[in-house]
Image (cartoon, rainbow, N blue to C red; front, side, top):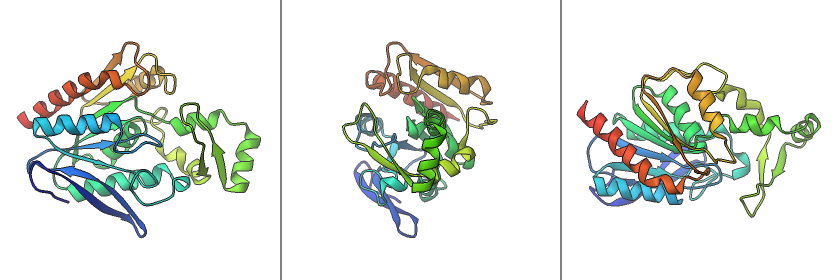
Length: 257
């Protein structure tokens, strides 16, 4: 997966027999590469995704942003979404970039996926920058469902959900319930070999700051920085300049080492 210097180009990576994920790459032909992972029911054309891609272009950082399967331009049905599938997509993109080192920048669900990918590709992922990471958000949602509702979901195979900040509802298959214990990062031990910075708003109504605090208190990370955004909501659009500045710090540290 390569592209001419300084121009953003579309790319496609085959991640499964019938699934291809699509995105954009701007390659300045040097190490490392930044990879942006979007949130649940979002895509790589979101405001943060585009702002970070533009910042990277201005600084001369090679940069990738792509849509997870079932999202945006990528193949797949959203109702078949699983953490396993999203992680498969992410690792396939990293493999396509190998052997170049990578900085993973993840928003919400993308933050959780970034952490999971770093655990599985420690030699390639050299730094993490997470924005309101949705650690264990599926487990948290399941905890609020009555046992009878879980049984109905299991019997029917699919369940319809609605969210107050989205105009439309969505459907998910029960497979996401069967798999989820494998991706626990709040109660299971977490060890990372790379530095990690987390931005989280103290007014995040979707994923409270306490979620990140719980993670930070347990994780074993060589350089862990938690930056609390005063009055920050889940999207943290107002914090984009701070996030870009932290990306610059991370990039400088990586290129000096």
